[in-house]
Every structure is written in structure tokens, then in C-alpha cells.
Length: 418
Image (cartoon, rainbow, N blue to C red; front, side, top):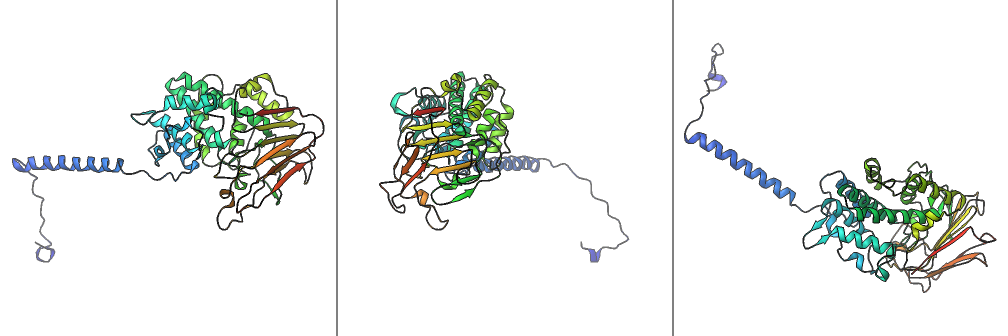
């Protein structure tokens, strides 16, 4: 029946609903069960679908750490970056991606049968970093002092510090705290009390950004020109030492850092491993150049692949690595921070960087032709220098130096090495 044949004056009442009986009712139940089975299958299929590619990007994996800490679902294929043999070989490759992957694993899946046990992985890695496993491992590996990537390792160890407290693993909690203390003590030796105003290398003088806080002027492998303004590790040091900062330039690590800070209630100081007394001692190094025994004890026993120098005079900080060990990214061999005017208006960061700068077009020069090079500091001659020889294209042979270092003996000269 349709509208054209139905008198408008008639009113139709709905017929009373009848409850299905017999086979019809059973069929409805079977249909419902089939629908539920189908839905479960779809959900299982979705959960087993391949995760997004983390793209071997440290910042993406730092975001994955945050997701793991907050109990959120997996965002990318973090587990492909877990290298079970990593703490036992000083070969090439990344020294941050395996550590990030292991931090995520420790939160999400500490033990995967036949693949890894993060309790032993982290014990071996941290003991190796702290100089307790002999020549098999060295602090920082082949990314010692990396301005590009060191913040990723710090966030990873902070995550282990937190998670070990959560699950009651006292051994890993203590080892991770010791690693954090050693790292931030080295940062204090190299830190300027304020960010630089200008950056100086052989090619140009450039301005910094509006970051407020101490700046970790630590030389290192895998430290290219596009990361000279990277403030991530400086922000972490500021928080560790209790120094004010405006967090300028902080990106991927912010959420994970905030979660760890806000949820930590463990023993022996902050999530950064520092008590209030430790914080004051770190600030003393930065502001006055005085290294208290408690700070010196934090980095005692560390060994590095190549020698690295930390030198401090009043108003001047110098760090220098004597050789590069990584072939994927160029190093910055030396950084010298001058509080007083030298080539500009003071608060100047001078760099030993004997590499051709990238124009922004074509292959990235800081990723090609990377050689070991060498660098040294001569306090009697008041000079520090670096060279990329034997040079490889696209880098011509270069020798760079920073001269007229302060006269007189420094307040401190700390050297780590093999």
C-alpha cells in the first residue's frame, strides 16, 4: 500500500509485536553470536596489524617512551630497535636508538622469550657505561658527548630509573641513578651559566635563540652544525641542577620529562638522581668553578673511547675530544665559552669545526666524508686546535684553532680516557 491509495481520513494502529518462537528465535541468537565472533576477529586483526614505522628517528622513539609510560597503545614499531647484543660490542651504528628501544621494552615488555631480558640488558649497559665491565664498553660509546643525540640516552635512563623504582628493582634503580649523576656532573664541568649570545666558527658568527638557562657546552662525536642550538640536554641539566629555564627549543622530550618529574616519588633525590645538596654542588661548579668531592666522585671510574678534556677558568669553559670515532655524522671537536667580550659582546661560544658547512641544498655535508681527524689543547701555548685530515670529499683538508686562551693555570682540568 502506498500514499496514493490510502485515504487520509483513516487511522492505522500498529499491529502488536509478537515474540519470535521456535527456529526464528534460535536464528536470532546464532546471528548475534556470529556478529560477536566477527567483531572479535576484526579487533584481533587490527591489533595484529603492523605498527607504523618509527623511521629510526630518536624523537619519534622518545614520544613512544611517553606513550609507554602513560599506558597508551603502541604508536610505532619500537621493538625493531631493541638490540639484544648492543651492550657487548663497541661497533658502528647508532648508540641512541638501541637505548631508546630498550627503555620502551623495559616499560612495555621487560622479558620477551627468546629475544631479550631487559633486566640483564640494562644491568650490562649501565655497568659498562660506569666503567665496571672492563674494556668491553666505554661511557658514551662512539657518541660520546653528542650534541645531536645525548638527550635521548638521558631520557632513556631516566625512564629506567623511574620504572625500576615502580617495579622494585633496586639494582637498576641504583645503577641508573649513578649514571644520571655521572652525566650531569660532566655537564656541570662544561656548562655556561647562561646561553651564548653568539656562535663562532671559522665560517661565520651567528646568533643563538631566546633560550633562558645554563648551556651545556660539551664537545662530542655526532655533533653537527644543525644542532649547535639544540637545548634539550641543557634543559635536562637545568632541571637536574635546580636552575631556572624557559624550556625554549624543547620538543619531543617534553611530555616524557614532565611525566617522569610529576610521577617520581622514589628515594635518594629527584628523578634526575640529585638531592638538594647535589644540586647546590652542581651549581657551584657552574658559577664558581669549584668541584666538590661529591661531584668528582660521580664521574670517578668512567672510561671513554678517546680522551675528552674539561677545563675551566673564571668565566671560560673549554671541552675537547681528541679524536672522532663515528663515521655517520661529523663531530664538533671543541667548544670554548667566553663570558667576557672576545669577538662580539660577550657570552660567546667558539667552536672547533673543521668541516664544510652544508648549504641547505643537496647531500648533507655533515653526513658525508666523515673522518677520525684529531684535536688537542696546549695550555702553555694557550691554544686549542682541530683538523679533519686525512680529509675526504666533500670536505677539503682543514685546520682550525682557538687562540689566546686565558693565562695562568685553570681552576680545573679533568680528563677522561681509555
